[in-house]
Length: 340
Image (cartoon, rainbow, N blue to C red):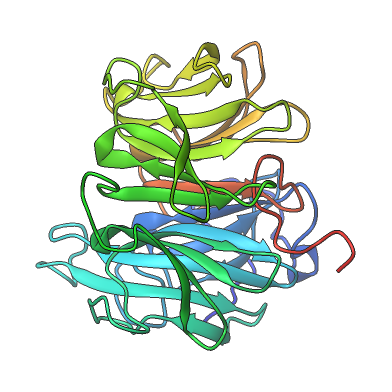
């Protein structure tokens, strides 16, 4: 595992290299750079201050293949690797799976792992396309095990202590893409291929759903959802290429469309949107190869990556799937209790 201080593109005019002393500074952004097979932490000058994964074209377990999700847990980083499809990597023409959720330290050493590299399954300590992981305040990990059609909560000893649904059922979950623990103890799930977001109790009851009646004009490809402090729900409406904020009654109160920007891919399929403490929204605009921060008035105030241009050098990304600001858990499950 590599911890790399900076990545640069030969010939590019770039700021001075960042130092590893800037690791985990508030305001930095942690990005799942999916098809570069790496997780990077950048500062606001676009410099990479920390990296896990060797980078593009490496499909070994020393990288994180097809990384979908990452979050900072104290000085550690939790991340989920699904794998890369055929044709995405020259060294993996038929596709390669990862199927791990790993917790790594600053030096890139794996401190905990669920799932086995290259193994697809549903038995104990096995996963099939884990697209998201959430560190819970009790030290457990909530995993969206997409290929197995389930959400599981696992403890440090690798035991499944809770699962939804109890038996895989496409009517209940079809290609789930995210799960967040809410303050009320319920789980907020993006049920991607059922085109809905649901809130379920620990007793497996659906207590809230958007939309109430499935309508792909309202939601098509639910990629991510988070519950905001005002009670509204922020949803990444991926196939409709937009982010929406809906209130409890299901009315859209704010939205941002990502494919109408100049030079945009016609279908960038945004995958993650999180609200920041300053009221802005951080969006992973996947196939525009960009992470963007937009304010409430729809103005883009920060970008990482060049729109619709994939890259791996300075300010370059390849299908970024997730981005979170270090130290900002607005709308997200905090990894620790306030008194920890």
